[in-house]
Length: 244
Length: 244
DNA sequence: CGCTTCCTTGAGTAAATTCAAGACTTGTGG
DNA sequence: CCACAAGTCTTGAATTTACTCAAGGAAGCG
Image (cartoon, rainbow over all chains, first blue to last red; front, side):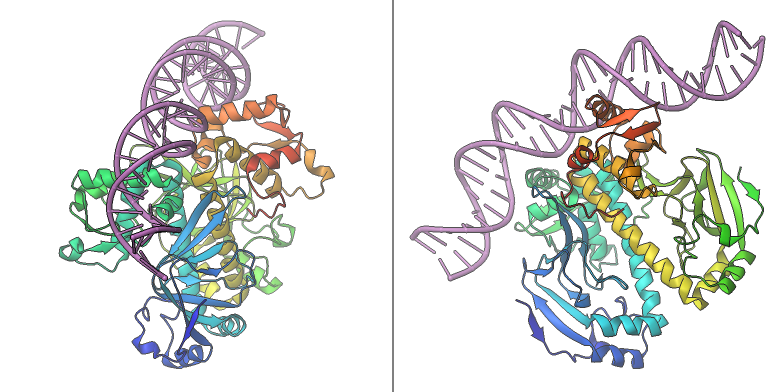
C-alpha cells in the first residue's frame, strides 16, 4: 500500500509550490499547512481512493499522474479527469467521492487531513480562493473534454490527447517542444480517457507514426515531429486558444 | 433583444430563493444584492452571451432553460451544460466566457453587475461558499456527462436524458411522477447535448414510444409510462444514486 | 526461461451517421 | 380563412467509422 514519507519536507523546495492549492499562501500559512500534511506514494496501478469512500484526506499531486474514473455495472469505464502535478484531489464541503482515484504512474501526494484542512479553508482566503480557481479550471477542462467525447473522431481525439500532454508538460519554448515525452497511460487507459477501444488507440497512434507526425522510441516514449500537423489533426481552431 | 423588467422584485417571493447563489444569504445581504440586480428575459433561441465576450454581468436562471455550448470550426456543436432554474451563469475571477450561452426556451435571468458582485463575493462568505457548492455541483454533472458521452449507447443516452429531466423538474413523490413533462429542447439541440445526430434522437424517442416507455401528447409534451424500464435503459446502477 | 501483461494487426460486424425525401406545425401575409 | 414558407420532425436506404473477435508478437518480471 501507500508508503508514508517524511511529512515535514520544506514547502519552499516543493516543485508545485507556485501552482498547487497552496500557491497563494504566506510563509505563516505554509507553516500551518505543514502541521497537517503527510507525503504518500503509490505505485502505478494502485488505488488511491474508491468511489463512496469517506474522505479521510485531501491532497495535491506532487509527482506522477493519477486518474479519476467512473465505471458502469457491466465494466465500461470512462476516465473523467487526469490529475497531473499541482492538481488537487478532494472537495471542500463534500465527505464522499463520486469516482475512483487511481495511480496511473507512480504517484507522490501531499496529503492534508480532511477536518483540519476544511477548517483552515474557512479561515484562509488564500486557500479558498485558490481552491475555487482550481475547481473552475477543472470545470473548463471537463467541458473541453465533453466536446472531444461527444463530437471528435478517433483521430482527432488522439491528436488532442497528445497535444494536451505536450502543453501540460511544462514545455514552454517552441524550441524545447520536440523533446522526448512519455505517455503516462497504457493503450487501454488512453482508450478509457478518450471514449475509444484500445485497438482503435493503437491503430491511430501507429498511423500517426507512419505519417511522420510522431516518432516512438518504445511503447511509451515518443517525440512530436510535426506540431503543425498534430494541431491540424485535433480539429480545434487554427488560432490555438485551447485550455486544459 | 433582452427585455429588462422591474429590478426590485422581492427576493422573498423568488421561486429559486432557496437553491440559487443567494440561498444562504441573510435579509441584509439580499438587500445588498437587490441594489445590483436586474431581471432580463430572452426569447427561445436568443443568444445570452457569446464566447470571448467580456463578462458584463453574472446571473441566476430564474425560469426557463439555457444552454452552454461549444462549436468547432466546421460547425460540429456540443452542449457542455444545461442551465435550469437556480443554476448560475458566470465565474468569479474570470472576465471572459469559454462558450456560448443561449436561451433554449424563453428564459428569465436575475442578473448582477459583474464588478459589484465580485466585490461582494469577496466580503460575503455566504455567497462565496454557495458559489463553490454550485461550481462543484456543475463539475459532478459534467463528469457524469463525460461517462454518458464517452461510453453510453444512443439508447442509454436518450434514457439518461429523459431521466435527468424528470429528476430535475421538482417532481418529488413517486405518485406525482407521471405528470406531463416538456422537452425543453428541439431534436437537434438534444442531439447536440448527447453527442448524437438529430435523426438518431428522433428514432430512439419514437422507439421508446412504441415500446410504451414514453407517451407523447405532441412533439414536446410527454409522460413517462414506466420509470423502471426507463431507468433500466440508462445503463446506470440499479440502486440509483445518480446526481445531475 | 516461462509467465503475464501489453500491444499490434487483420477480418468481419454493428451501431450510428449521412443522404434523401416527405410530412407535420406554426406563423405570416394575402 | 387559406396558402405558403420556414422550421421541425420522421422514416428509409446506403455508408462509414469504430467496435468486436481473434491471433500472434514484444516487453517486462519473477
